[in-house]
Image (cartoon, rainbow, N blue to C red; front, side, top):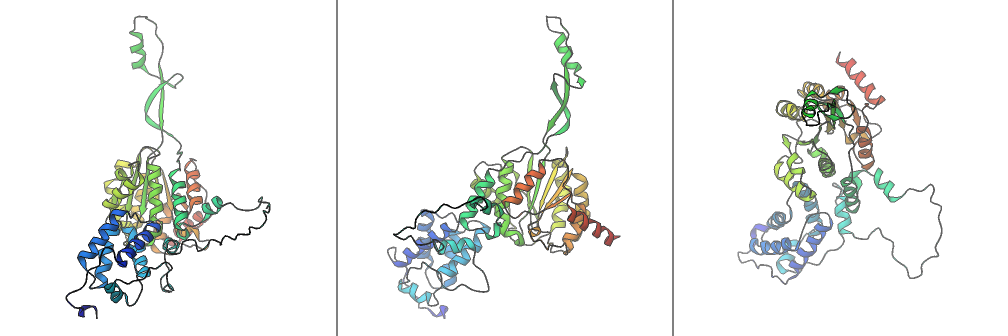
Length: 418
């Protein structure tokens, strides 16, 4: 029993093998995508020295307090810890500071699949073929009907990407540009051949010493409409949240009047945080504001809060709303239909982005999906780079896409409701 340890427990020495394994463990976390630097490694060794090695849970939470800074890092750290420090006689070997260095994980738990990022970090170069001294002769291959790596990455699901592919996808997302068509506003601007005469500008021109009177004209000012993004960060969307936050950051820094909100069990306005040019600073600021990462989902309640508090502020001049969620509401879609109807009437265009739509056999069977579908203008998948490119192409046009499946579902739901 761990509780029956002697009172005098030796503390790990800085030059022991435990410190070396903490260094290798930190490198594994950094390879898996966590921001771990030399300072954190030194603090981890000092924290283990101060906390001692009486219990495995104490050792786990000591390293967790040092290496984990955000909610989305917890799952990677938890899997890495239980794979790296997997020895059943861990406590005794830690006490003796003779824990061997671990490079390749043992047989994985069949009940829970490891993260792809963690597998790449623990098994570097596993998929690479060994280099032979005798290289085969160069063979020319007709590549007319082959698919490049970039095309494969465009169609690959975010959930199935390795860490290297995720980094490449994030770089591609940072280069996205959103050419939303401009719309007329109530304000006017000067124009040589405008449809209206600007009497004030004409009188000011007539007061000049030249004495010449020239009619000044004006035309309606054109400006891109506001773009409002409502992103679901609940547990069912956790595997896509990171990509969506990078997408929201790229759009926010590309144009003005972009308003970003996250929702799970509550609504959070992260617009100011995502306006930082540095994506790491922006995501860190946004993470500090949000407290309901990977929790439940209350779509109806959060939309009610948005409609009452924010709709009049951000939904104006033909605003476009992007609603990113899988439609799974833990409250059984209570009041969701009424809030969706109000949201639809407050904006010019309501686009629902659902990762579950990537499945060809998808059907709106949950109560949340049935309550939301009748009030959306477009229903699109959002699970890879190709779907994001399709979204940008759809936003570039003023006409709504005629999705036959969406029209069929809406007709069926209205008939069922009536």
